[in-house]
Length: 57
Image (cartoon, rainbow, N blue to C red):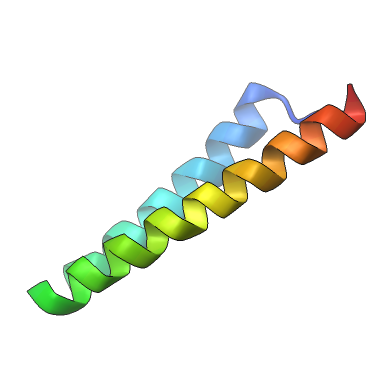
């Protein structure tokens, strides 16, 4: 069972939209800190997705 492209696009689009709204309401220092932490979270999420995809192959 794998996610199709539409579902993946919907999930990624929702996350990007939520981050965009959050960044709009922050100051420059908080925005920089948020970008740094989100890069770490994206690395972890991509590693998890890779692991899940290898399990279902």
